[in-house]
Length: 169
Image 1 (cartoon, rainbow, N blue to C red):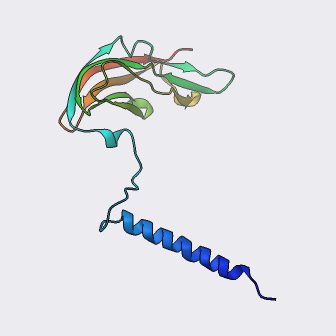
Image 2: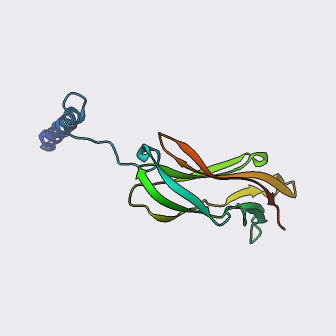
């Protein structure tokens, strides 16, 4: 008995190959009618420009290493948010919030893209970082906290502070 599904499977395969070929031609460098590049946020949105920015409060005030709860056998570097007052944004700069604790091999940053619609407070948050209890050996650690306005034109530091991070029991 002959298999009747073979011609339809073959048609499906040829149809799929044709669709892929058409999409490749339409999105390729020669024709370029279709843009298949996904939209992204963050570094890809960085452009020229600037903004007036100032720090609100002290993002280092509650920076500390505290024990985890419920017997987790870890300590957490508790990172408070940085609140930045942003005014007079031109083009597409971004605000960067960086926390570094070199003795623990820790450095993390978050960014918030800006545009002309931003006028007011921007809050940059970071997740706390867990370290095994055995890794926390000192009573305190040195840290650097930086907030910057960045663009392709400039990188201006709004806030920079070297602090001592206490280890709390």
